Image (tube, rainbow, N blue to C red; front, side, top):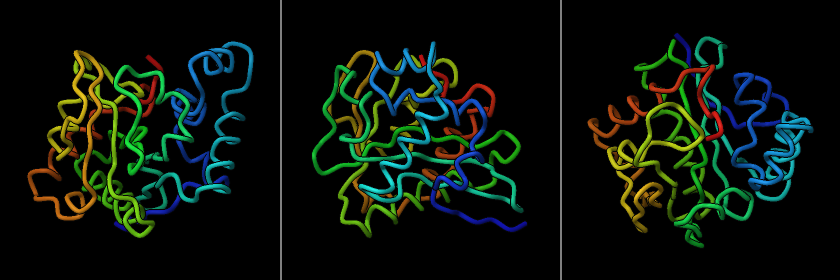
Length: 205
């Protein structure tokens, strides 16, 4: 079984599951996101966002392949590029951090170590670029796959709460910690990403 990790580009964007490929929950503010879903073309908006992020900032995601088959991905970017981030009650994201937008692994490959591969790949990429930390908005009342990751799993993989909230706390992971995860943290990460299915993952809430 061969596994490889590649940067998200315009050439491989269609390797994201169809629902994820058309999802612009994070890429647009709430008003424009709703407008794109109702009368626009979310897929084109997604492509435009990826293009701008690549040109202005650089790599903004990773796709994992197993024997040539897309098996999962992670997306991340500075908060400046993520309009939805300012809509959360615990915003803004810290100036020295990049926002973990969303991530998932297909159920077929859950438990194969791809969660560790994806997030450590992200951490190594950001460390090389001088980023100090990753932050994310968690959902304390998470019940089903959505665009927002469950807070309990973010805590399980090493994130710490930096701004509490009854529903959407903001959490932070120092990159030096991300690069030295213990095995139990890697297992927790697999549980997090493996809980998301291709058809339901990243659904706007």
